Image (cartoon, rainbow, N blue to C red; front, side, top):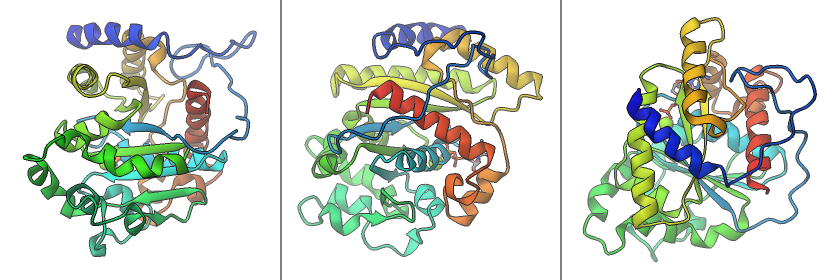
Length: 307
Ligand SMILES: Nc1ncnc2c1ncn2[C@@H]1O[C@H](COP(=O)(O)OP(=O)(O)O)[C@@H](O)[C@H]1O
Ligand SMILES: [Mg+2]
């Protein structure tokens, strides 16, 4: 715990300059983070498309809600009129599957962009999803070979960044769903990202991994991408009925302060159900608490990033 604590203090200071917290409403209610809720209203329509903000959705622990958060944050941003590109950077292809794409059968995936640059264009790989304004660069198990294939390439950490460059002008947000490791693929995501969002399962041992993740973010910032910021931590699978959940929440906020999004994602079976249906929860169960939660997160992300 103390280790995570130390890392947390460092990141918290780094985050302070990034954005100013919205005004607190008078007598505002306390939210699940234990802080007073800061209501962020409907975001204005985007004033321009292009120069996308690239966000790596990253945590080396598996099953913490990276893919679920990528799909649903993306869909909620698209509902708010933002043009969104999702990048599946996990050879398991869960992001592609969760959007109803039969990824096993695809010939063209992110893998082709990474190992055959110049031979394949992004438009050969790009898929329009059922969500308006949201596109996908899909992946499947082919991507698992990329780490080895890239090892001897010059500038191997910047391969994804090079591939995404022609797309940056077409979108407002590019969200990269990372695999659960800190290997070369994840480093590629961090090397081209403007910022990192860490989905974190509301569970005691999840805190420990954050120190290691933060060290990796710092190393990448130091050696590959000086602009890389830590945007925030979104707590997932929260269950307000459990003392354990509430205790972990308190600790996370103590350690990471304002880096923790006010939006907290509750545990509900509707998320796995929606991914079986191959849809974001925002279209599969648009009025559900889960859909509302990711809309609230999208408002926070838009508010914090100003686009
Ligand atoms: N808030 C939630 N409540 C309940 N189940 C969830 C929630 N978020 C994700 N899940 C489920 O947990 C599993 C792991 O989530 P996933 O987003 O795939 O994590 P990761 O990408 O970090 O491995 C999936 O089956 C997903 O449907
Ligand atoms: Mg995943």
